[in-house]
Image (cartoon, rainbow, N blue to C red):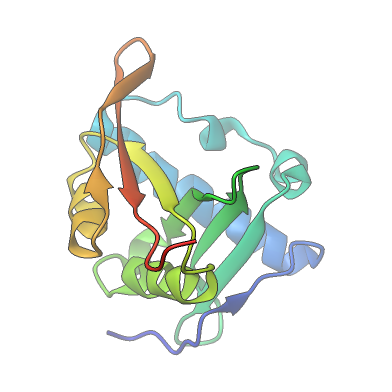
Length: 161
């Protein structure tokens, strides 16, 4: 692994940070679109301004040279469930443990009495394997658009409420 970590919060009010996150997100989602055979992923069409307006919390991991290597964004639902909205790694840095490191940081920061949920394209084998390795349980697949199968995953609370 060639990450320099540690994982830390990202401030999308900073122009350079927001632009890097937007660029990496588009590049990562373009790879996913190829993997799943569906190019209608909303984040591929999201403008920088739209991305910044989302009520999300952001974590990032910096790579060699200090640039952002990957990021994760999440929000809490009304019942306290932590929902991962996006997990993206710069395609030039795939297969270096960055997504795992980002997810582990979120799990360490999230209240242990809360479930964590995430979805990905059902045909995105690397993401499906990642969530399984980290203890997420696969739920039922669903289809939000014709030609798109999504897989849902939940990590149960690690302590009772």
